[in-house]
Image (tube, rainbow, N blue to C red):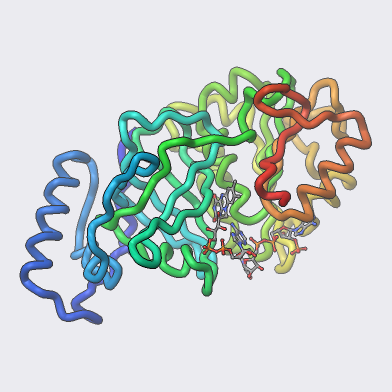
Length: 321
Ligand SMILES: Cc1cc2nc3c(=O)[nH]c(=O)nc-3n(C[C@H](O)[C@H](O)[C@H](O)COP(=O)(O)OP(=O)(O)OC[C@H]3O[C@@H](n4cnc5c(N)ncnc54)[C@H](O)[C@@H]3O)c2cc1C
Ligand SMILES: NC(=O)c1ccc[n+]([C@@H]2O[C@H](COP(=O)([O-])OP(=O)(O)OC[C@H]3O[C@@H](n4cnc5c(N)ncnc54)[C@H](OP(=O)(O)O)[C@@H]3O)[C@@H](O)[C@H]2O)c1
């Protein structure tokens, strides 16, 4: 897949805020040249790599469990959310929907790592992540400042249960996400295999405000610009966004949308309720939503699946606590 042009909003000319040392400029220029030669389609304009983080941080060193990857693009959705792509090592294999540890150098140079779902599908040549910005979060208070050319740590062992392998085959797949819980769905719905396994797929994204609807245009178009899955998505994908704290066409929480039938709209067809025989469900996001929905599904005959014992629904246990 070609690498998308780097959004101009990601460039922060450091000259405005930081005096730039000539030696640093040369180092960064050679870094950009190496990047350009490895990724010929990459569009780099402006002095993207010259940030406070880059200027002050020593280069990261790979370890036995972590590789060092380079940021290729950054998109800020709003003041709470951003996404970014990084280089992908040839040895990095994952199943669409899995997560991995990523991070930056922490205190004393020790890696500061957090779990992140891949938002890109397993076949893609780069890796994409969708991230929250927590103002005082140890990692994201700094991660939100990354720009093209910066380095991050990437764990070598992706894992997770939000994978098709943990589900018994079914007809409809419902992907229920709140907030950044959308990330694994962006991986799964861009994977052609999803459309072979399920007849219909629904992405349900519940957020507080309209601007929290990351990837909204791409989802509303049903991945029309994605040459690999656009035809399948047009026929088999349904996008159901809901905004719970601002006016929007749909404003109920996920549980309310189940009860009033909104989740079973259009080509998703019948029945207008969850059916353990044909429906499969993945959930990711708010702990409250996960616990309450899992309890409701258990009550109507669904069984939770895992990699070793596939079932009718899956959640990422690490989120539940
Ligand atoms: C399996 C797994 C997968 C994850 N995938 C993602 C992902 O794809 N994208 C992502 O942004 N985060 C994801 N997270 C959360 C992520 O690991 C970090 O918690 C997050 O990056 C914040 O890190 P921090 O060090 O800044 O703050 P932390 O100290 O980790 O968190 C501070 C507080 O911020 C809030 N918070 C943390 N993460 C989120 C979030 N994603 N949404 C809303 N509130 C949050 C919580 O209240 C938390 O107590 C995932 C977590 C797990 C366990
Ligand atoms: N725009 C913002 O203000 C904003 C955006 C992103 C992140 N943040 C920060 O990040 C933190 C997490 O925010 P977030 O938006 O990612 O997650 P969140 O607060 O969990 O909200 C995401 C969505 O999940 C819904 N939800 C919450 N609990 C639920 C439950 N038990 N059952 C069903 N649905 C439920 C919310 O509905 P309700 O609105 O009805 O709760 C909202 O639509 C916040 O505490 C905030 O500090 C703020």
